[in-house]
Length: 223
Image 1 (cartoon, rainbow, N blue to C red):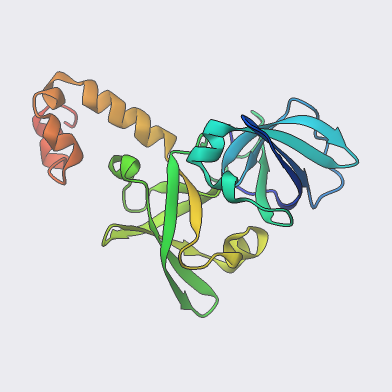
Image 2 (image 1 turned 180 degrees about the horizontal axis):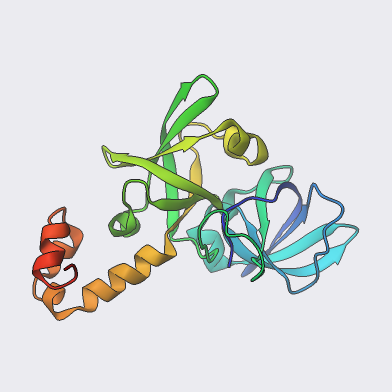
């Protein structure tokens, strides 16, 4: 599990493409890490396993399926990537719970700057539309962000200077693709609601704006 609070930005030092696996080597910016073979590390929002460690360079295997469903297929040597190590039970949960299992690829459609702040308008994968709510959580390239609004089919997220500085977001531009993971709790809630008999009898409503407080109260979810 991860939290979406990026620890550092690493650099891709080599890529070896094979039929079913791509081997990627990444140099972390920190030299004091205690990484070990077998550790899980989130790379641009994708949970990968350390398979080799030499001179502070981490090697990971990327499966064909992972490459096809994330932006890792487009990573090149010298690219910078967001890195977060797995959550310890004693750690602070500064962002929100992430699995590192990307739901799909989004596209940056709009970028609006306002002084030191800026807003990104991201077209999300259609498959996660039911999990998105105003002021809810979303992970973009492994970064825990708050949804500022949902307008015109876009997820708008506000980027503060600190977040831009310590991640790769400051390098993004319109048209770039990003890995997207929806809120894990939203997925479970959606699953539980969809399995309820009252919702099954009106399944079309689970995906429509009519799923509001009045609907939930009518079917016994709210008192």
